[in-house]
Structure formats: structure tokens, C-alpha cells
Image 1 (cartoon, one colour):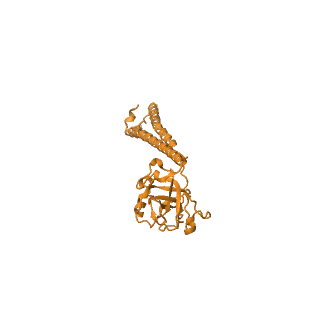
Image 2 (image 1 turned 90 degrees about the vertical axis):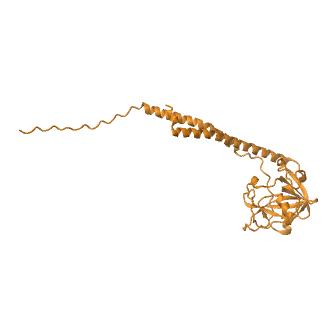
Image 3 (image 1 turned 180 degrees about the horizontal axis):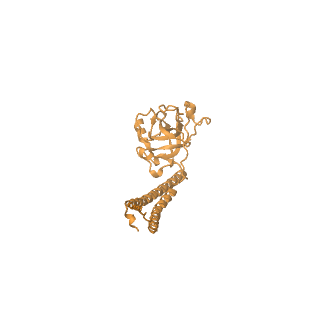
Length: 288
């Protein structure tokens, strides 16, 4: 009765089922790992944002990089903005999903080292080959407060580096590249601006530089989300349920095949059709 399992169709079906089970189990653990990463990231962000601000050079140094565990830590830096060294990072979205640029301005400190400050987001213009007019940064010495962020790479962001960009534009936020272009040592990573002290003048314009030079005022970036955990845990359970369902489905198919075969075997054979009898006609008697 079980000999049908050795047929080509059933051998292939069984092999596929045996491959699907470990694959779905692995996918479930992969989703579980992503869930754990999201939870760890949320905890890191929450702890970093709750911590008191600290001087930026306690977390990074010129030519170095901040520790991954120090991401989103609130830091402070004092210096003078180098407006001539400002560049725009392309293809960046705000919290509404609108496309634009990040405004990256170096802040030169008293010891001659610089720290790259992301002053915020500005909307893209109609011509992607021309940088939009951006409000100049505040003049004079300022103290900035912001979130410590790591330099970007294509591997960590998925953004591909490109050559031949319009002047004043970059694809990735890299303190190393800015140090090479400006010829000054830059602290590794960058600061995502949240506050400037003294507060920029001209509260109506919102930025002293805007009053001086006109142009779009950079919008401060929102605080990163550290509450949502996504649906990764639900996806993990779903994959494991699929894995458990494969052998159950295989058994049900086998039982149905056996039931059908038994029903076929119990069915009485169809009677063989009788061949048409040859019709014989009497031979007429010979006339006398």
C-alpha cells in the first residue's frame, strides 16, 4: 500500500518537504535575531538620550571613530562654523518622506580640530544639479548640542558613492572625506544638531544666518524612534508554524493517497463488454 512513496512524484515531494522544514526554521531564527537587534537598538537609543550631554572629544578623536555603543549619545562642542566648508548630503528624506538634503557644516574648535555638524534637512529644488540656497550658520563662537553619530559607509547605509557630483554635494556623511577636503583634522563621526547656544537671533526667522544670508532654514532632525519593535517576532512565530505545518501536510497527503487507493481497490471491476455475436443466417434450402 505504501509502495507509491517510491514513485518519482512522491520522492520529489518528500525531498522538497525535508528542505522546507530547516529553511523555515532558519528564517524564524533570523527574524528573532532581527527582533533582538531592534530591542537592543531601542534600549541603546533610550539610554543615550537620557544621559547628560558630554564633551564630544570624550567619545571620539581626530581620525578616529566613536564607539558603536556611544551612538545617539548627547554631546556638546564649542567652536566657530566654517560656512565655506559646508556641503549637502544628497537624497535624504525628512520625517514626512519628502526628498532633500542634509546640511553638513564643520565646526572649527579652538585647538584647530573640527567636528562635522548635521544642521538639519532642507528641501530639494527643481534642479537636482544645483544646490538650493541654505541659510548661513550663526556667526561667532557657538556651543552646539546634538546626537553623536557614526560616519556613513555604503555598507551601513546602502547609499552608493558616486563621482562627478555637483559642487558642494556629497553622497555619504564622512568626517574623513571632509578632513581631506578642508585640510584640517576632523573628529570621527558627526553631530546631529538639536540645540545651539547662544540661541540664534531673530526668532521670527528662526536662524541668525537666515536673516543674514537668506535661503532655506534647515529643519532639525526628529529624535530617533526607540519605541517601535516592528513585526519581526510575529514573523518568527509565523515561519515556525509554517515549518511545523509541512510534516502535517505531508502526512495528510499520504493518508489521502492511501484512502483513494483503497477505495479504488475495493471498487468492483467493471464488467468486460461482450463481443458482438456473429449473426448467422439460415442457408435457404436448395430448390428441387
